[in-house]
Figure 1 (cartoon, helix red, strand yellow):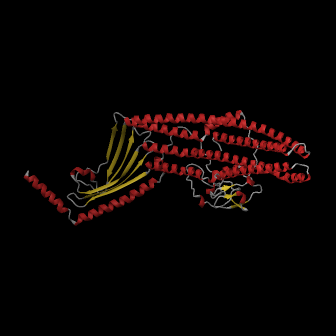
Figure 2 (cartoon, rainbow, N blue to C red):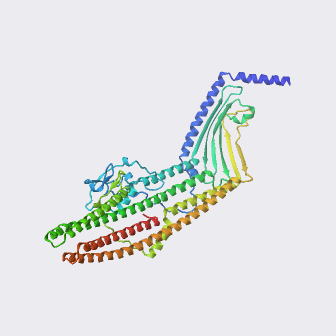
Figure 3 (tube, rainbow, N blue to C red):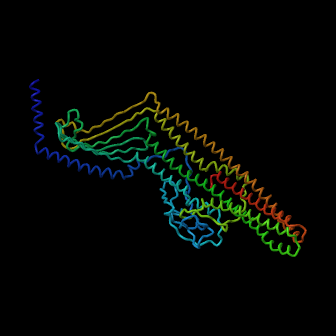
Length: 583
């Protein structure tokens, strides 16, 4: 025993004395040079392979196969800026200069023909103050139509721009989820220059997760030289280093779906759900803008009625005064007419205030290309268009269309898709985890040991298995996901019922308003006939001014009743289109 211990000490001393020889320092430098040359070659090969179609096909994630979704249409409608004034503050349209602002067709900020408008593409939106302005001639017939208001909403309304930016958020989340299938490079260098066992190790490798099967392939190069502890001899390689490649393939859990693919599938659903989200925002804004617009049109026409009624009293004031001076009429007639003038002026002031209020509300939706609100004047008020007639057959067809394309229905469809993805992920967690692996390696260069045990090709095969006995993680998530799926299905049914009720109610309101319009127009026709007879009777002295006022008030009230019925009809039409999920 003493001899053996002494022999071991002598051998250790020989090793320690050999480490300080200059030739070993040169060998250390040579090994480093060989490693860095191999590192450069392997890096160039892997970077070239990373750009190849082969590696891209491995990282390509298949889409979640649940149900086809409708293809999105254009998200941004080009702004028709014929009626929009370029200002830096809320400016009355009635005071517009000869030059009006209009966006060029290729201006993305103005929603031109070349503007980004489809999901999956990044939408660039700047603040309104940065939008470009151009000019256009004033139209010869400046009447503000509903299309001008809706185009302004779709092109520049800030709330819609916020919804459009959700597309960029969803694109970013999808890109982040796809990061789990990036081609990965890794490297390390570990050196132990001082100590009993002096050695160095360098390694460079790659790995690629395969999206179609959940497998992972990996490979690389490593070199280890110097003196290693007897229990770490696997760290040592031949002088040329070791090349290795291997793969890990799941056989049960994570084979069809795993957390990485779940993240991609959900991100894809979120990206596709952006379009119905924007559509929903659009139809809400258009519904609100349409209601405000038709009220503005109705109030503007009502002001015309009150002005005309006041003008009647003002026009006959001089004639009544002359007849009173001649003694044809009593002085009380002049007092009554002056009283009617004051009364109608008060009603006109009230009507003008309502018009101003409706104009201010409309300016919230009517904007120029810079995003500044516009205050439309009286000269831009049009008349009501022809009534739109919808029969019951069209109602049935529209209901079927609404249940298929309504944005809220489509949003819930994507929620159902995500719930089904979560169910598949939970069922995956219930399965046992069984992974097969295979690895082969080959050392190159001179032998590192006298036995040459590093030189032969090595192949390693095996299985890893794991199964939690209670499986509570998977079972709990499965129960929660199934409950969320039922919730989404119930919400979809509820929304479908609401759409049906809203569509039928809007149709009923249109029928009722149309009948009111027909009866009101007949009432107006009769009121005009009565007024004409009353005017002739007043000129002949058969009736007094009080009786004539009754007929004039009746005619004006008949006009206002028609206007109210027309407002109600077109508001019902806006609600009908909103219930259909269309613009």
